[in-house]
Each structure stands twice: as C-alpha cells, then as structure tokens.
Amino acid sequence: MFKVGKVTHYYDKIGVAIVELDGTLSVGDKIKFVRGGEDLFEETVESIQIEHEKRNSASKGDVVGLKVNEAVKEQAEVYKVS
Image (cartoon, rainbow, N blue to C red; front, top):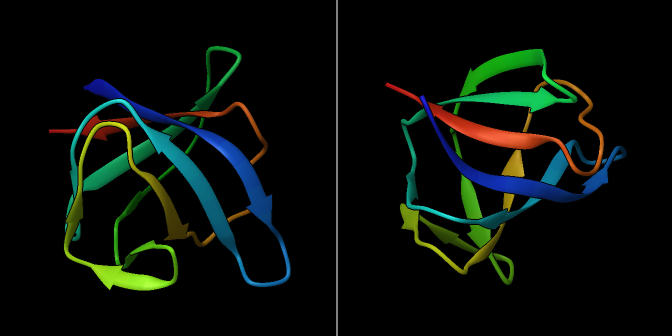
C-alpha cells in the first residue's frame, strides 16, 4: 500500500472527492482513504475527471475529481492498495 494523494475538498451533494495526486492513479485501481491514522473505507476507482473531462488515468501533480461511495473529509490521505 502506498500513498497516491490527499483529499483537498469534498462535494457532498455529488459525492466527489477532489484529490491532489502524489502518484499515478487509474480507473480500476483499488484505493483506501485514511485520516489521522484511521482507515476510513476502501473502494475501486470507477471514474476520474480532470477539469470535468473523463480520464482513464492521472499522474503526479494532477488534481482529480473521484466519485466516491462514502463521505470523506479534507486532508484524508489516499492510498493505492495492491
């Protein structure tokens, strides 16, 4: 498991987390959200958007919107689960 980014914002009405990436992320990757050392939840990336454009993958430095199944707080860290 390694860190791929951090949540900078969460839009609760549409269930989208804005994540600033430290690594690469692709549709189909399994990710885990962690905050304050506590595991929040895991899910599979179903869609990635950059500036409202759908993408199959994104890389370090990109700021992406991820559709998530549960609410997630800002500053939660995002890890890729292998």
